[in-house]
Image 1 (cartoon, rainbow, N blue to C red):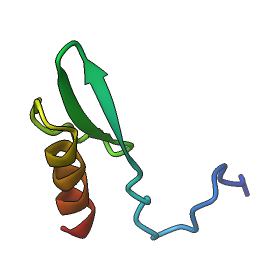
Image 2: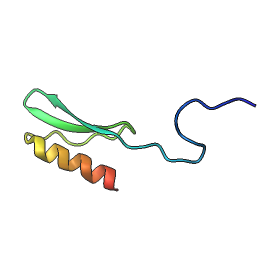
Image 3: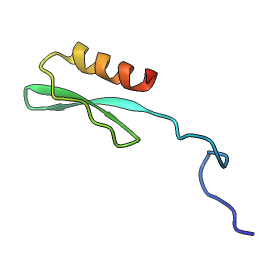
Image 4: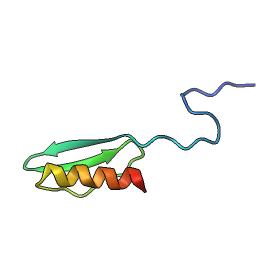
Length: 56
């Protein structure tokens, strides 16, 4: 029987880890699941987008 790599047990949902990334005058939130928030001028709004994503 083959072993599975990674910290997750079978059947567990992967953890959402978000970060904010600056691109020129804009900031956006990204997640390890592939989600990407809209570009924002305010860093605080990008952080709010990330919190909303992880809460959902």
